[in-house]
Image (cartoon, rainbow, N blue to C red; front, side):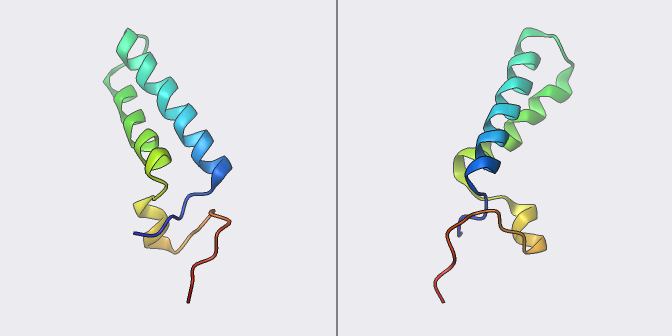
Length: 65
């Protein structure tokens, strides 16, 4: 599993995920707010399954060939 999520992308995912989870935990939004766990997890791990599926990569580090 090679990193395919870059720095700014990771920061945005973590921030958006944390906001959604916080809003869901306080009851401000419905249960759909718990979907914020997905961008939160991909931000921390640095790997996104849809990015891998479509061949996208926002990570600045190039793969060794």
